[in-house]
Image (cartoon, rainbow, N blue to C red; front, side, top):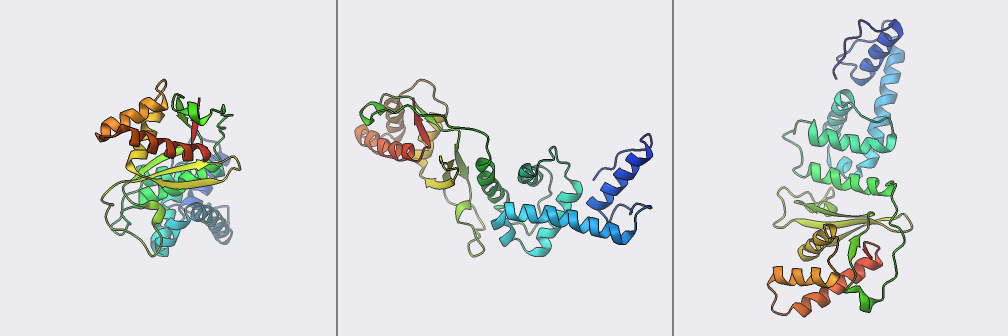
Length: 257
């Protein structure tokens, strides 16, 4: 952690910086002279244990698969060196994810999927506390849905990973990416429950088209999918696509307009 020059600060502020620096990294920063070391040790343990426990609970699978020594070395480094931009506890998992993605030096014993797994675990928490509402969907008869303009709910996030992150556990830790990407949807329902579902490449492509669409109908988007697949019977693609979209509508992933 960078200790800023505090020479021009009032004495009480200099003491605060020394106090905080020692708590974050007691091995590299001296104990404040005015505080007994025994008492400072209690402070150090309380602060660290609080942060470590919160992160472990936010990333339970990551915690399970990383050995204790490696885990605590990583959390110690995060605690000592990462400068958070928010004091809010619900934002701490995002701060830890930023640390993993942008600051931490990869270690030889890191699992190759560490960043993707951390992101996958963060998504569930992020969506559960997202201050967003899907709004009321206008009811559209199934016979008219083909000509409606679809939209993805703001409470549904399509995700793509190189590793099957939703299957990783202490007994399944792949060493190389899958032959094909893993496509998932994470969504929050009206009861504030967060769900994950795996989708295939074609459905992922359809959601990609919908996410960037403003005026094309369901029919036109499904026809585009049929063209991209070079399918000899476009009607089969359209019927299959309608079945998929109907399921996603019931799950409140897709909204009709």
